[in-house]
Amino acid sequence: MLPVNFRLFKKKLSENRSAFRRFLNKTEKVPPRGIDNLTPVMAREVWQEVDCLSCANCCKKMTPTFTPADLKRISRHFNQTPDEFRKQWLRKDRNNDLINKTEPCQFLNLQNNKCSIYEVRPADCAGFPHLSKRKWTDYAYIHKQNIDYCPATYKMVEKIIARTNG
Image (cartoon, rainbow, N blue to C red; front, side, top):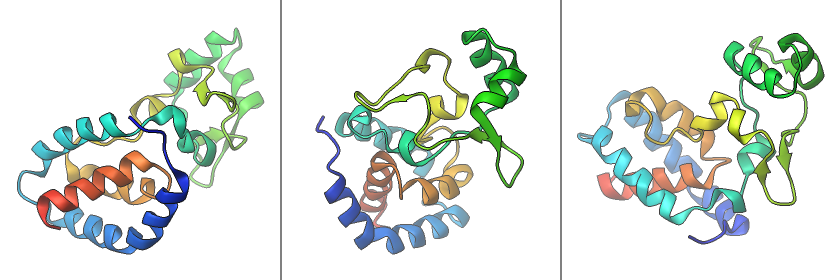
């Protein structure tokens, strides 16, 4: 597994973003045959190639949505009430979802790209980047967003396009 090369990632993204988005738009409506069986295989390949700790772009450029269960679990970790935790660390976005007040994430250690609350992190973080969680049609729209930030998502879409001749 090699560290993420951000210069190469950004170059490839700028060259392929439009084509990847067209593919994702098309397959969101009409998925290629067998794609739901292919995505777990491609995800395993991707995780052999992408080192998240060399990247942490998700923690630097995005924010999770905090659920009520996340609030209870994480606030307990800090010996706070959910309301105290929310007031200290979170804000509401335009959709009224609770998200981080700051970017990068306040729980990211920038020296080693590790999460300081990894064991109790939000469910959104635990599932990211959602490569093969559900049916392709349920997550293609998420992949459209994540290709801009996540080298693993980019690589997954790249592999699926190559495998399906998309």
